[in-house]
Image (cartoon, rainbow, N blue to C red; front, side, top):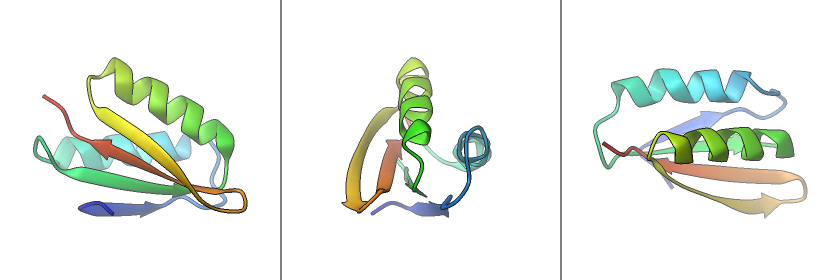
Length: 75
C-alpha cells in the first residue's frame, strides 16, 4: 500500500514511468507510490530507473500477470 496509487493496467512503457515521474515530483521524501501494472516490462524499466534515482523500490506479484511496484521517494 502506498500514499498514492497509480492504475497503469493495460498501459505499456513508457506511460507508467511518465505517470510515476509526474507524481514523484509532487511527493515528499519518504512518501510511497504504488504502481499497478500487468506488463512485466514496466517492472524492469521502473525498477531500474528508481534505483538510479536513489529511490527505494520493490515489487510484488499480486495476481496472474499482475504486479504492484512500490517506490519510496528518496532524497
